[in-house]
Amino acid sequence: MKFSLLKIPSIIRRYQDRDCAIFIGLSETSLITSALCERAKQADLVTYQVLHDAQVKGILITEKNSFFPQHYQVSLDISSSDAVTQLFKKIADAHLTPRWIVHDLERPASIETLSMTPQDLESIWRIHGLSAFIFGQAAVKAMLKDGVKANAAYSPTIIFLGAMDAVQSQPNFSGFSAVKAGVRALAQSMAREFDPQGIHVAHVLLDNHDRDNNHSNQRFAEATAATCWQILNQPKQTWTQELELRSA
Image 1 (spheres, helix red, strand yellow):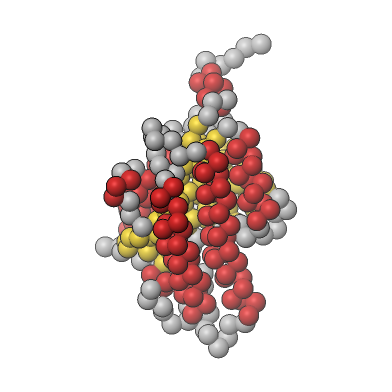
Image 2: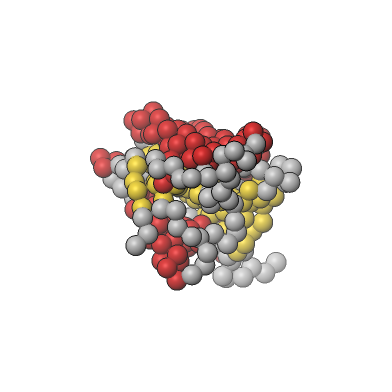
């Protein structure tokens, strides 16, 4: 049997305990998620790019790159506790330790308050609110199970990328603003509960910028990813719990 010399490092590392990053989003073309994946690649982190797909039963994992570092695209219903639990079990079975979790969901379309139905509000809550709780809880369980090692390259870090709507509600975004305010409260509570146990939880308020692919938004996405990387690398003595980012 012949082995490619290029694949030997990948084969060796595949069976070692290693750190991984998990980025949760709604769109495969998200500029911020792409920038986060590039940061993870530079840091030799196995990367799971999670995309919401309510039609998928269970989880669907596709390897984006057969060479190290591995980059996997995962499709699942991000509001399904069973699907998220299944994902974290597969990560544990692969001898990977979740170190960097970023929950980043795009702002939905506006809905006038008088036109909004209970079903509309529930949909926003399931995608933006419930998924934040499910992933946050699953990540903390995995991080505590693996143990917080003092000599690890990175402290276990969970980052919720929120929106300015959480503190400055905009017209026609009443439902979204209410849900994002809840995610902010969730992050703050988790930070105070789990920071003493060595898990860094941060909430980042993002400006309501346009996420279309243009030069200005590309720079903002890269700067946001760089800030998330800085949060991951912060010394425990100066952990950030909330940050506000505005596009220039």
